[in-house]
Length: 87
Image 1 (cartoon, one colour):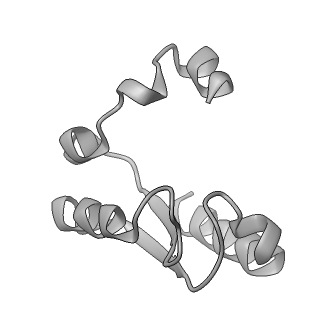
Image 2: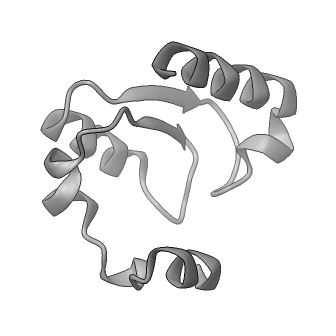
Image 3: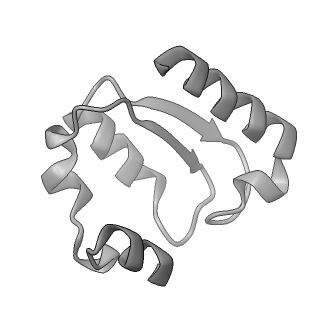
């Protein structure tokens, strides 16, 4: 989180995704583990209810921030496909 804070000049802890998601005009690719114990999957569902054009990858297993570690090939392919689609 400290890297994000230095790059975007905002403390990520102060960001309220549900309150701000509708303001984003850029494409959003969200990936979320169904087993995430740090950030419940219901939060991803709430974001999608607020902004229906979010592209979602539901990851069946794994801890918070472990998508690449657990599924490196799928992760890479999903990211590349998203970038190809939006660029």
